[in-house]
Length: 89
Image (cartoon, rainbow, N blue to C red; front, top):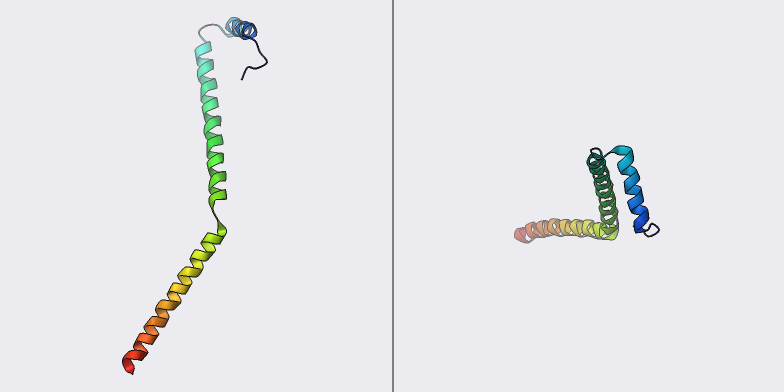
């Protein structure tokens, strides 16, 4: 994450932050940053899962399942009709 910043530069940045905000404000600032990062992470995870769900749905599977249901319904209707005709004969 800090590939272009050396250790001495990070220490200097923390020292400046300590001077500007004071020692009592740094924990609340860190909590706020952590909460914001958590919200961003959760939002990105939700977006990823929605994208995966949308790509996992295969329209051909839903169409074939609808066709097989209709075919099964027609077979049942045909069996009922043919059964009543066989009983009459």
